[in-house]
Length: 101
Image 1 (cartoon, rainbow, N blue to C red):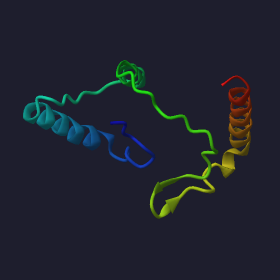
Image 2 (tube, rainbow, N blue to C red):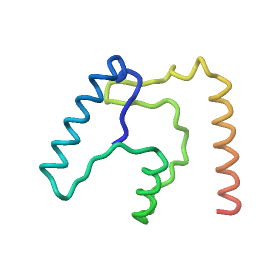
Image 3 (cartoon, rainbow, N blue to C red):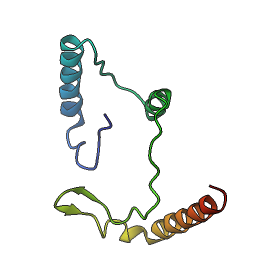
């Protein structure tokens, strides 16, 4: 479970204290589930070890929504160059994929 988005760190001490309790409870109550703190690289390695063919997203990822009524259409307007680089890179990747894919 990835955690820690924009608004989750207002009181990090309380947040981790609560997570510690949750992790302890799950590890005591369920033998088929083990929760632990980790790193992004360990997470990616664990996912890769499952040998699952994950789908590739080819269309534009902007705008996006994180809930049914919450659309982030203007979120990246303050980073217009980043958005342009991402779109250009995505376009180039799709072109190469169509040629050699």
